[in-house]
Image: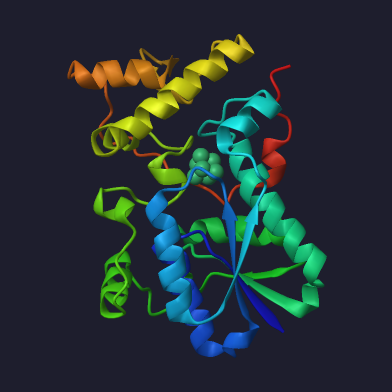
Length: 267
Ligand code: SF4
């Protein structure tokens, strides 16, 4: 029996991998990483150091496109409801690799979601059926993120820098189409060049699609209002009171139902 951990480069998947590697023969553990080509440079350092520390095999997958190329190809700008980027760059390559290499009875899969998000686990299990999926961090002793940071410190591994900058995950370099206004505000303050890059790419895609779309939306006067990254930046810079400082959103890579992303083309 092989044990494959969906390894995102976040601290949750690190801890999940540690727990698995402590329970089963290390030679049977494989960490599976899908590269979106939008990752933070420090993620690769963390990947290398953490995999060496756990002492198991790492398999890297890469579609070859980044998220913006995917949005262009599918003619759809990802957002909090539909994120073709995660389906095409993460879920499908991982699923293909698992199906190509194992029968359901030959492998157990693991994800790094924790007890605070255990309501998402059923969805993940359904998405992967008939493969069996476990989430070690959803079980006792209910390890917290701070405890994982401490574990990493004790092992001499620096935590991925995005956490130190206040991001809740280490995906897509601090960017995420599922993120909210407060998350993007943090991106603007922490990594302004990266924010500007995504602002430019959003504008470029809007022009390419010739559609009135945006990653972000907000509710005002009981109406949904589109807000581009350019608009958001200008509002932040002018200290507008329109910004929702509690709208962090959330990344659902490996959690959302990939079937939900199929009918999205604007054309
Ligand atoms: S982190 Fe966000 S932007 Fe990146 S692949 Fe996942 S859903 Fe898409």
